[in-house]
Length: 281
Ligand code: PAF
Image 1: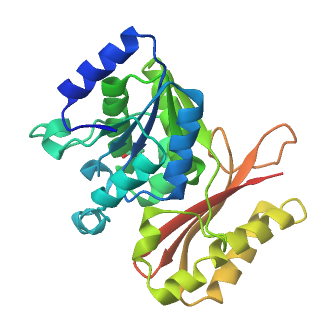
Image 2: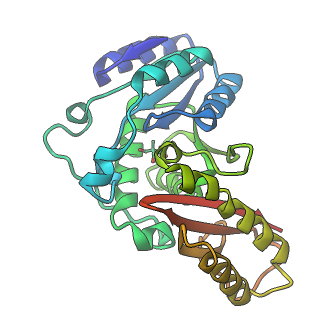
């Protein structure tokens, strides 16, 4: 695996590869890799000649400095995992390399997608995500970039970013990877206490039950039902449960047969914030 820390070196290497008409698949990450990330890398390998992964803990997308400092950093293990799936190129820039001396985000207009769900609770988060994803896509210039559907809102926002800035890249969403007990894989899971880890699968269990009830109960009733379930679980604190149109991310007034909907949830397990979602029929 070729490892680069500077844009210049990475770009020079990729320019050479592109001359030989290689298609490039890209998986941006913040490290602390798990099987979910590796499944994206494997998919990128299947579909492209060359795979680039970036590991960059992006300071502008965190809600607080405290949260940023606590983000797990496991570079040595990440490198081993990437070697195990035959990743071709790893880009690990420093904060200065990306932001120079100006650690701030651009302001984006994602046609309202940024104001829903996570946007209501994490101010400026999607400006930070937009800033780094745009910068990375401009550096790597991949043919296709891969994102997990656990961060479904992020995926839709990145699609909008590529469309608005006319970036010549296909954005692909890939299925959520889950632990055997159903908990969606996340780098944050490693920070859960034993008690919180044991109860955390309750989130997906409740989503699955809500999915079954969708249609029989209307959205308001379903939301009430979910809130009630979480009231019974003192170790988990529900931040939001929302049903939204997959395209607009807005809660529909009326369900239309032709549209696709998803249930989205954010829950605190102690001070760890977990998100998840399921597609609805
Ligand atoms: O999903 C993530 O890990 C991050 O938000 C991303 C896309 C790598 C941008 O920092």
